[in-house]
Image 1 (spheres, helix red, strand yellow):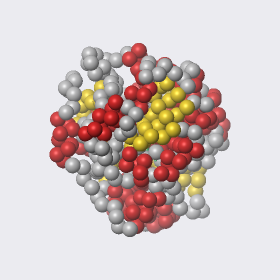
Image 2 (spheres, protein in one colour):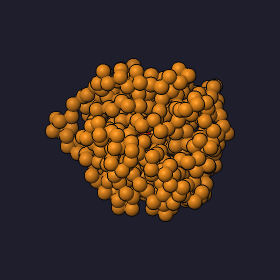
Image 3 (spheres, helix red, strand yellow):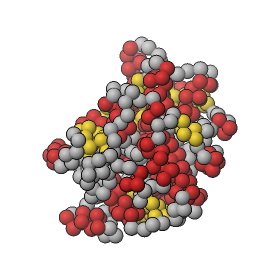
Image 4 (spheres, protein in one colour):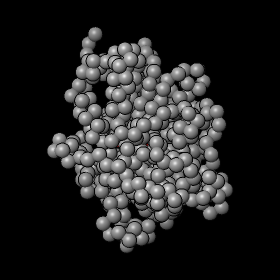
Length: 454
Ligand SMILES: *Cc1c(COP(=O)(O)O)cnc(C)c1O
């Protein structure tokens, strides 16, 4: 058999519906609470921030939610994304495992994020929104929304976590190339930003702070809404196109995964590849193991508390029950910027509590080693975030070798690393260190959790 094994679907096979896991869960996730009344929020509470169609998706319970034709039309530019069998990597590892990866780096922004950015821009446009504010960590989300904004004629304003703004000037240049405005966060433009800067002028920023700034700016103008690139139910929903396609591509290969692996920041690319397979486990009695991999320096799923918390640092958002490190927790400035969020998507947290997924945490140096091993075998240089999934898949493949069994492993290669070359330069120069989060800071951040409904 040839070494390059690629499963390609014709564009007519782009899914016509996203998969909504709510339809198959044995119990629904806990409700989202209003921070003042501690009562479940309703659609009106979210209306200043999101268009009604996305709010409806947030609480939808039907299994399939149709993908609008204009969104499918944009998807045609790069979807269905390819699924590869990693034969060269299998040989390099000398493993009997069958390793497959779904490659989301083929999108214009280089990651899975346009899957939801395009859908969100479409629904906002439909409801007459002129401007969208958002936050970005490593810049992947900001650039994806900038791309979608230019396609649909919507102004995009991005608050970018300061440490990434300084580390990744090319992501900012990309956002600006697509016509977006990019401001380092914390910024003096918002009350939330000014308060943080007053306490610590050199604050490196965090996703929680950048969210506060973007939300604050969105609620001030009627023609402006806010968009989030991960965490929320509708974002995870849009990403399920990844797993739906992968399932069909694996059928072409005559295979089905024993293990599915994804990296988790806010949980969207992981949910995207995993939820359709969790649905098959629940509905059809399949027994695929689902593995979430997170950074040891920001370990919400493995070390966080499952509790109600705010999504942002200034406490402007509703309360959601999730695995959290505390909304004021600032993780160290490690290189997988897209994984530096204090909380986990409520739906991913819920399936973890239900025992439907496993979670593990890895330090960054081992992840970069795995990413380079993958690049040398398969040719694609993964994003630092994706390296966590690569390492998860490699570890499972090595377990197959140890156990002398062939299992099918599917992982999500959620983005390429072409804008993260400084991270690889630093790795090669021996400048990367494995950092643990600050235990004292975590204890303090957890002590400050709101006391809602435990
Ligand atoms: C944003 C991002 C992540 C983390 O976000 P999730 O919502 O957990 O997917 C991971 N990988 C890449 C390439 C990203 O751009």
